[in-house]
Image 1 (cartoon, rainbow, N blue to C red):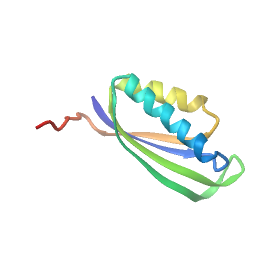
Image 2 (tube, rainbow, N blue to C red):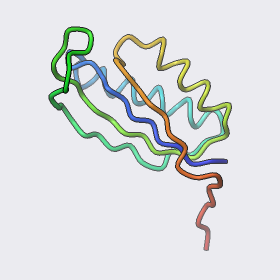
Image 3 (cartoon, rainbow, N blue to C red):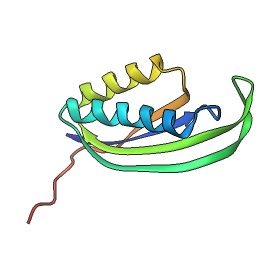
Image 4 (cartoon, rainbow, N blue to C red):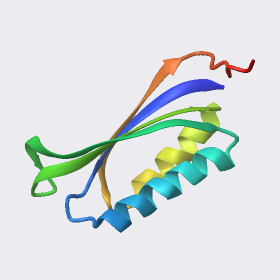
Length: 102
């Protein structure tokens, strides 16, 4: 498994419950594909440098996880289908993720 980070820009019009549903769906995909969610960091509502879909603000969320490569492909496919996600980017943080067990 490799370690990845996905940064999401969510619609500012999504309610808190809808944002939670999107994140739960993505976390479920990671776990279903034999991955491990490491951290979900919500950055909150921010002003954008330029308008995206005629919006000047957006809600940022950073997901850090360890997963096989096919999990990233499935995750990005679901993100593209979702209307509440404006933009996203996935970056590989490390080639090998080692679980820390005592």
